[in-house]
Length: 275
Image (cartoon, rainbow, N blue to C red; front, top):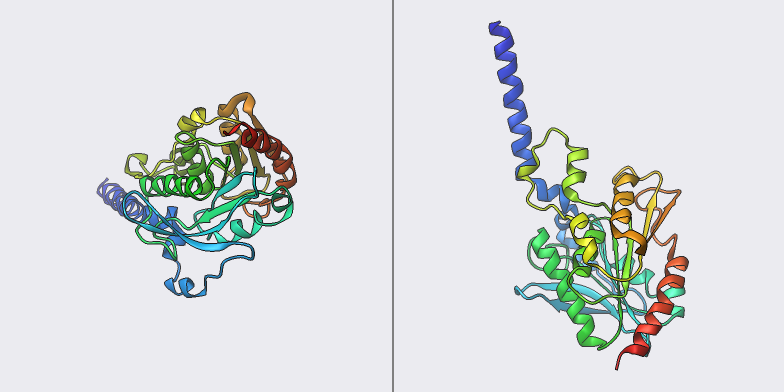
C-alpha cells in the first residue's frame, strides 16, 4: 500500500510539473513564430509589387507590413498568417495570379512580437493588430472593400476582425472553431482553465457578414478537418466548405481561383455602391 501511495504521489507530482510547464510556456506553443531568431529582421525584403510600411496600433506597437494598393474600384485582401509563419508569403500570393488580374490590393502584416514588429503576442494583442491593419487600409484606400483572409491561427484573427469591422467576406484556410477546443483535443490532460488565449471563433463567426469560404486539407495533422466543419456549420448558409487533398500547408492557394470567382464580383458591386 505504501508503495502504491508513493507511486501515486510521484505521478501526481510529474503531472503537476507538466501542467505547470505547459501553463508557463503556452504562448511559446501558440506563437512559435514570435521566437524566431531576430536576425530574420535584417533579411526582410518586400515581395515584388509591394511596399514595406509600418502599421501603428492603438496601444503603441509598430507592425511590419507589406502593402499593395488596389486598382480603382477594386478591393483589398487583408491577410493574416499562421502562428509559425511570416507575412511575405501572403503578400506575394495576393499580389499575383487571379488577384492581380482582378485589381486587388493586399495588406499582410507581422503580428506583434514577430520579427519586424514590436511587442509580445497574445490574443488581445493580435486582435488589436487586426483592427489596426483594417484601419490602415481605410486610411490608404478609402472606400475599398476588404476581404479578410487567414490561415490557421490567422483565420481566428480574421473571424474576430470580421465580427467588429466592415468586410466583404471571409476566406479561411485550415481554420479551427476554437483554440479552447483544439487544446482540449491535443492536450486532453491539461486543465483548460489555465489557457490564457482561447480564440473562440465559434462564438464570433455569427457576427461576420458576406460569404465564407473555408478550405481544409484531408491530411491536416495540425488541425483536424472536423474543426473546420464545425466552424463552417456555425456560419450557416453563407459558408462554402472545400475539403481537399493536402496537409496544413500544402493547401495554401489551392482554391484561389474559386475564391476570386466568389469574391471579385461582390467586391465590384460593393465598390460601385460606395459613394
